[in-house]
Structure formats: C-alpha cells, structure tokens
Amino acid sequence: MGNVESRHSSNDFELTVRAAKELEHLLAHEFGAQGQGLHQKISSAQSAAGLPQALVKKMRYLATLRNRLVHERDFNAVPDRERFIRNFEESKAELMGIVAQRGGRRKKKAKGCCVIV
Image (cartoon, rainbow, N blue to C red; front, side, top):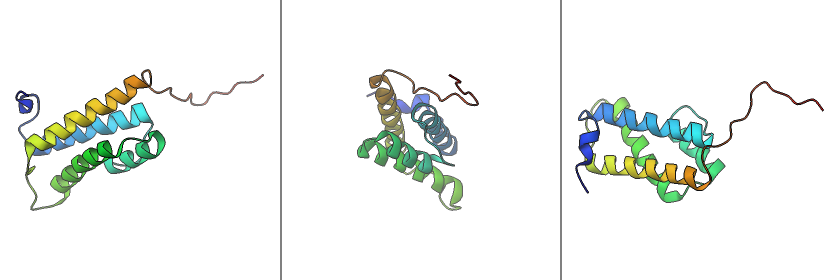
C-alpha cells in the first residue's frame, strides 16, 4: 500500500484543512455543490448528483474531524491519521471517477448571457 503519509502534511490541522479545501473545490466545481462548508457541499452534491452513500459517509467523517480540530478546544489531533488519509484519497479518487464516467467536467452555466431569436 505504501506510505501515504509522505505526500501529506505531518500537522493534523493542515492535513484536515487542506483535505477539506480539496474536496470542497471538487464538489463545487465538478458537481455544482453550494454551501458554506464541506458538510453543506456534501449535502448539495448528494441531492444534485446522487452520490453513493458510502462516499458521502467517508466525506462526512473527514468534515467532522476537520470541524472538531478547528472548533473544539481540547481536540488537537486526528485519532487515526492513516484512516483519515485513506478516506480522503478514496473520496477524491471516487469523485474524480464519477467525473470521468460522465465524460469530464460539468458544463458551467453562462452568467449574464441571453439568446435573442
């Protein structure tokens, strides 16, 4: 399986924030997800794209740990880094696989355009 931690920050705060930012970006730009944070974007993409429940569960685990690290005073480390990294890598790969299956990036809606016939 290899050493997955070598590509990721050794700092748990940086690890969780970067993972959340990456998933938020994918959900927003590839699935049109909207919302303030990762949990809201997951819900948005789940409704719009019908994401598999197992994928949603993995991403919610990541979002919850990120939120606990950032907001809970006495929570200062990811309890199982290997699991966190594995869930992140699997989630990212599965999202990219869904994008590839549907033939690439989602089509973006043009803003401020109209067609007059």
